[in-house]
Length: 364
Image 1: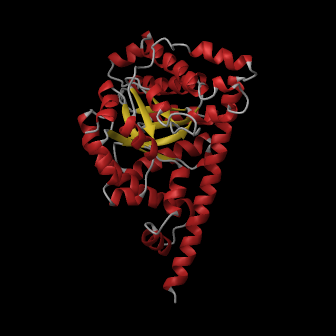
Image 2: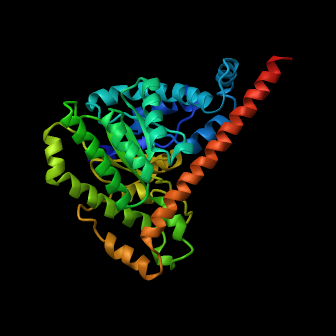
């Protein structure tokens, strides 16, 4: 077991790999991450699947088979994705069982095309959860205004949810409120209060957005400050009488998850975010390259401060240089949803092209 990644695991932070490909399942890479690098879960998104399916021919046989059954578009894609993710979920199942359902999860996102449609998101979450038939598969729902309503209803229905595309403390608190309402409704209805969830705050995109708008000494500091501020809100919520009542009834916390932790600035340390975001009762999703870097030379120098540390002072410095963090959070969430929609369109287009080429090849 790698000592650097084990240090984070021993601290109480779950490390999840931010990637999924059929090759990494087939060649033992994911199993190696679990055995040697303390990886206890996995996340996916449309951009990850666009790259996985568009590279090489690992998916060609199943694409041809599903297309031959008359499947196309989103239906065909979810057939591909569920095969990968249920296989990964089975690899993580021993971890899921050992942690009494808290860890060992994989994630599948609903179609980005329904990001503003609450009813369709609720339906899609229930359908994908049923199709996966795995207790350790999260359905990812964006934390938009429409998504917040869908999160509450999905939690009430007993669907484990990974809330994605959060960019601020306020985004987090809105989805935490939705999660608690869903659990409270379950308790009132005589249902189990145990429905797992994570709330994914995106970090590095903040620093990419402001890198040319602030003085050099402030570069690569805003994402971490936003995370610190959000972590304080998370710990305050867990200490609140409302949450303590739910915990006493048996509910599990909706853990904060750090997303977008790969360093984009080549001048910055490649383990910057992983080191800065070390905190118990959280999840850190890490790209392969960042995971390997931390395993090689990452150091755990401390843990995040319960009181937010210097977050407010740092954010004030950015405001002094013209950065409106509230407006930027809304912009980043909108841009994130647009980016996933573009990847989705490219993904479906690539599957359609492959389907046509495979059909043409078999008809010769």
